Image 1: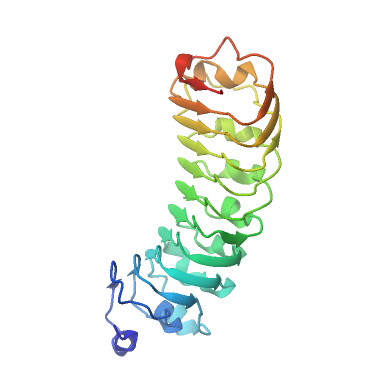
Image 2: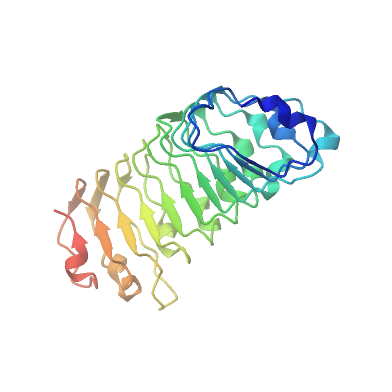
Length: 270
């Protein structure tokens, strides 16, 4: 395919070029500036090279039409440029860039995805640095964060409590350090929590809950970290009645399993 043909029209709304191993080019910088583009599907190809962005024209940048970007399962390399997430991205709801070969840190401009529902940067093993705080202070519509299988370091910020719509948090198989924020156990929408295979440490702290209704958590994976101390009884109060699986093997917990657990044989810490 010759991408140049796209730039001769102003009426393109959706670009769908997927599952085509013949696509081995780089992504042209101008593709991010097509004035009426709302959806970009380029997943499952062999697109390569780094992402480059043109100097943004104010006239073109005025319309935030983009809503869906999927560049997953390619061979893209290099840094994700800070300039990629300009104001045109404020209405993007889904950004998939998993299973590429990106390096460097996640740009702070990712906070411009203020309308994002799903953010997936998983399986970019050389992606490094800490998670930008802007994800947790500006992207308040997020329902899923998936950043697994990378070299991310740093801690999970307390600001994660701002994401009150978050249902799925997949941060497993990274290099994350520090303790698990206490607020994480009281997030009102969180259903799946995957923090296994990191370097998280310290004891689990649970704040007393003022509400009595069950939290929505279904699965909690904490295995293969450096967590210590005893497992607090508050963690398994009646509010945990929805939990179906709790995996915490490969840590340094001490003491006994709390008698208050409603999980019964669903508790797993061999």
